[in-house]
Image (cartoon, rainbow, N blue to C red):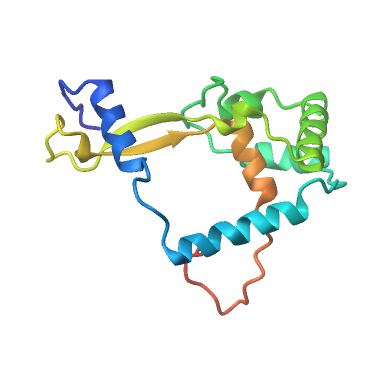
Length: 166
């Protein structure tokens, strides 16, 4: 990897991304209809109790699939910690945790917090310009497992091969 030398301050990046991520205008008609749809759906499903359970076997399988050599999230825990520390007790406890999250529909705040790391888009770009970086969010390994649990089943037919592995 190429080391990037920059005099750019973190505050300059923060202000740059705050400006481009702040919605300054009113919503379009299409955006308004999306907001109404989401609000109505939320009202319809909020308060429902679900009896979701995630088995310890599923957790064990997901721990085996977690990527190694990835940066840790805000909690400092890496995939390797789970892989090398995997035990029946750990899988049982995580099974209970994820089952409660799905049943009560309450996600811990640490699962929703990420570390944003600016990555320069191309080595040839000026490293002192905030617009030459793209933000990458590093999530907690526990939130990544939750996302995998919540992924819908792939019901595409066998002739559908675009945007799929292989």
